[in-house]
Length: 417
Ligand code: UD1
Image (tube, rainbow, N blue to C red; front, side, top):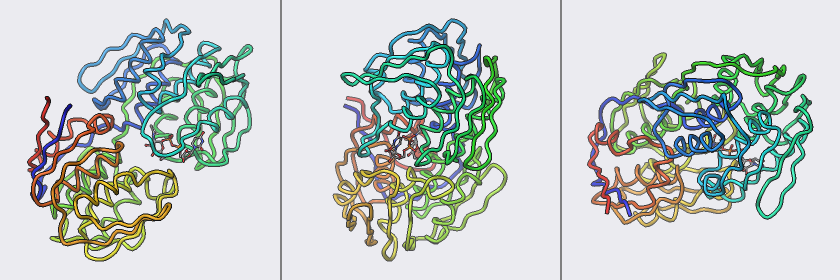
């Protein structure tokens, strides 16, 4: 079992480059199934990206990885069932359903896995694909899907702007016959990135706020594309610096994508400057509480940044209030933070964080990807030594986490037993 060992109490200081967005590269990799051969750059080295690569290979694609570039040749895609082990590895595996159906006319896969954040149904994906002409039945945990002829365009209104359902519908609609209009679509930057990639390859997708129109095309052609920076990785390192009274310069980032996160850090007392592709944060010795942080679909405060910010505010002066509106079980990190001396009360979707003077190092276990990042942040700010297990969660979303933090002056190492 691997462990992270963190000696806390060191101020993080320095400059780091942000990697490409996990949540953008995964749907774009799924989209490569629709085209000839594509080369993606700014791809992070993450276990979820590897898992997406293995799904593509299972379906007959050839993949080549060189540094941050992944080339996918999808000329000889053929219908194959996606093995359950791959589906269970990450929730985003469901994003392959739309493109497989579009390309092969049928698909068979099991329900996806991923972080346990309470019930994570896929009803909106299934309903959307049905509206585009897919016939989908469920048996023994498997989805059997087929299309008679070709998928067709439809007018669809999502009851909730689900990121994954928006992407799946978009991926299926781009080569469907006729026009699709999706209302109440998710507006996350990763959706625009997917649309931009599809258009680079000959798709006809237009995104106007929460309305996405797609004029179906016969097929997509090859394309080269650079993935957007990871706003959640950026938010995590900003929170880590803030928690340690540090000063950090992030490069290769889009500050506009963090428009809801930066004001929260400013309320906490951090000084923030931004340029076109950089963010500089200077934190005070002790943070101030943030009176209210409510997670919302983009452009609201991202649910993925909730746990990292909470970790930073555990030692702020005053009481911070969090309301989680996206996922029902997204406070799993709280129990671990309490082991370090944090004073947090949770009632349903609300968490009250009463700032304490300091946290103390402890033996911790990552509960999920962003909850794990929160524990790393808490351990960096804590007095003494912490050990963290459950690192497979962190490896899904952070490339060389400990190397990056070491460059900022953290004392952190990975023990491989
Ligand atoms: C994506 C992100 C994840 C982020 C989340 C919200 C990726 C790979 N993951 O996840 O990091 O936290 O957006 O910003 O991009 N829901 C349904 N039925 C559905 C689909 C979703 O009820 O068919 C519910 C979910 O249970 C959840 C909420 O909608 O409560 C949000 O889910 P969704 O926006 O779909 O998130 P993901 O695409 O899973």
